[in-house]
Image 1 (spheres, rainbow, N blue to C red):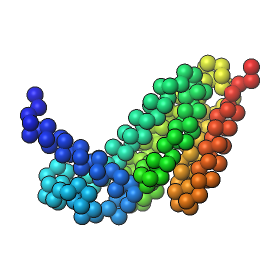
Image 2: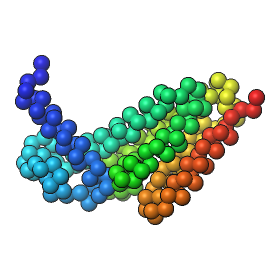
Image 3: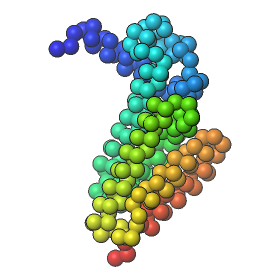
Image 4: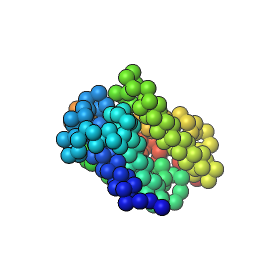
Length: 203
């Protein structure tokens, strides 16, 4: 049974994570200071350290929170689709829906973290890789399901196709964010949709 103090502690931890998540996403691990976190949360450094070991601990939980938001969103999008083809198309459709929010949030947490952590933060780099592998695995399963259903060509290389689709969608978001030109995002999403439609087996 949870005590009132335990519940308050969990609420405080959740508040810190949810407040810190967009800050780390926008400023990165190196660019986010403890003063950024104390200012945003209104808590003292001691209060934050009373709930987390250090800034690194906060960053890891913040990244997990950001990833949960993304996967929860796409999980709901995929549930609205029936066939494997429709579920694959739910990815570019979903990115169209959340693109303005992603930009306001500072970009996609997956690619933001992966780029910064590549040579600087082994733990976050591994977490980013795990997320990409999880996403790729899900798309490979959908493509293979489509082949079994007879709606996707049997000659399609599921792993290769999943990698290209992910690179297209993530790359479009990154370049759109960096340049401020939405055309990067729109062109890559259009290309991803066309690529998925081209997977269809001719009846």
